[in-house]
Image 1 (tube, rainbow, N blue to C red):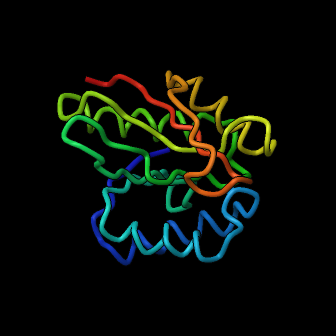
Image 2 (cartoon, rainbow, N blue to C red):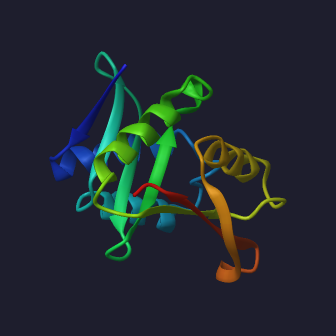
Length: 152
């Protein structure tokens, strides 16, 4: 497996579109999914490949001078639990080390969907801590959990 930072905006959008299409349990809202695809064109993106086969990606978005966030991350279902997400996370952290103090991620709070409960467990496994829940940031059915990790 190799992880590469992708520079071309159209390639970024194609990568995000392909991976998210494989993850409807997490990315099943067409407008929201399209927003991730469109926004990825302008954001730093790292992709994981096995030879030429796309496995997953992660995008990064600056939120302040001291904090950046995982904008979107996805690994195709067939490759879950094989260390790809952790490898993407590690590559991302290497790139932000010394530039930011904190890395954050937003996800649906625990207890609402099994898929997002697994997402929380993944982020905790790579060192994130639960910071705060915003019950209506997105909507009442999807309370937003903010998780943070010190990377400075």
